[in-house]
Image 1 (cartoon, rainbow, N blue to C red):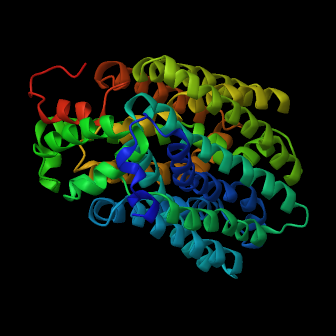
Image 2 (image 1 turned 45 degrees about the vertical axis):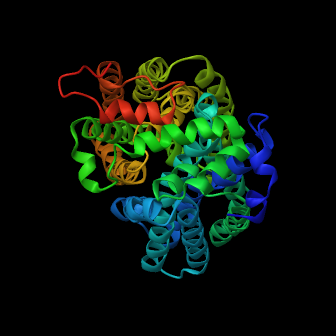
Length: 467
């Protein structure tokens, strides 16, 4: 807790939400999201040069690309006890140091083995930050702003992804792949410095009995009157929780955990992340022969998803979570069908770009931000860290399998049919399955407080319908 947070003006603040302080806090926490996108996307441009330098076979190509993602599940494993045990803020600091070590290690690596090890370390940082950043934002945000503010973290991921494409394009002239990874030191420094100026999550403080500190944080953000109301709701919900892992197996919470895991797994196996991760490779499959040209064409995709992420703020404010997700996953299924037609009919590169815009735009508008929004708000307070860590771990495990299988599946279809289009038929079917899952099982959480949502699961009868 900073001196500013303990100052007397906090107690007298009863003027409503302090937006400047709230937005500053959210901005700093979202740097973790920026690093998520930046770190994982760097490999997209760098792998073209790594493939030549390390003479990568299709198997090792997937291993190098997936090495960071292999480390990602271990971040949430740490987060399962760190976020609830030592707090959200210290956990983000640890994530920052993991990013720092990875950036230096990859930039100095002189063999495929050491490179994979340091990418693995960076993946742990990604996994930790991706769990704690949206959790922290959701816990500190007022209920009516929560959806939009958690989407800020998704916007930061997209900005990180776009920035990494621009950086790798600029450094691709000359093949400076080591400098690509060294540039990550700049946002890492910004995260570690900024975290000295943000408070701990009020809901975590309350969960460990520090009610006075929790009240001060809430009052600084929402005003004294609203803070006192919220702290009573938090105390009431905490009285129904134990905070142990065993609570995850209570009927209602268990169902919430299953839904969270399935939603996050779907967010990775739907095919869009593979398009984003392998964009330069897909452009070269479509006919481009120059690595810088393939990376430059990726910029159009990144500009598009940046625009879509901004539009997602309006969608999140206007419509319910379920309707957005149902529409988005249907659009993604249609987009993958166009990707299949693109490769099966050997369309021009311009059509390849147009086909990519449909599923990537739909994903960025809907499943990409809303999966994190729902995950960060769906669980009770005491076990939010543990439950989110388990769901995020499952997400990265699914992502790792997909990243490694994708090149081999593409190669298999290419050898059998002369093009990799069949891969996207599989992804289209997955997206349709996701639509059905959301329609049948996912409850609406828009405009509900975290305590209202938590109490819903804690009191849910086994036979009570979810919807």
